[in-house]
Length: 214
Image (cartoon, rainbow, N blue to C red):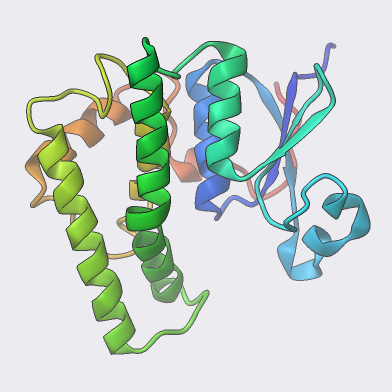
């Protein structure tokens, strides 16, 4: 059997790993998955650092050219370019999609992921810090909700890496105990995303152990 082109290294609980897995799933790309046991320090071993210089997850290997890619936003951009999917139909759309990736990293993902980490016991934070995270999340969600008024997708007339990236954050809003119901346009967009062929929620996409593509 010919091996899958892509091999994704990560952990099932990682939002950034989920973003990459989601992109591959939506693109119809089977991929091998390698669980990286962070508690055992696998991400700090020389062999891993030789491929993932930051010692983090995710790491994506492209067997077609031997490239090893890191940082989820950069990986999404790479996949859009190499697969010719979800990158945007025009130069303007491609630029806007990338803007939203960087906006997410700055304004949305930190508050959602950090709050989730506290709620799940992965990190510690006092009430005042959680209040700050909640305010930051609410501010970002209002921006996104306003933007989605009258739109089906974040950029242009179809799904782009902007939608995939931001869905990869908001899929964990429940674990962060962030209520998205008040954001009407955002909630409608989430339903459209969930109806896409190939979309799988985190618990159904990434296993807790390594897996070879079927």
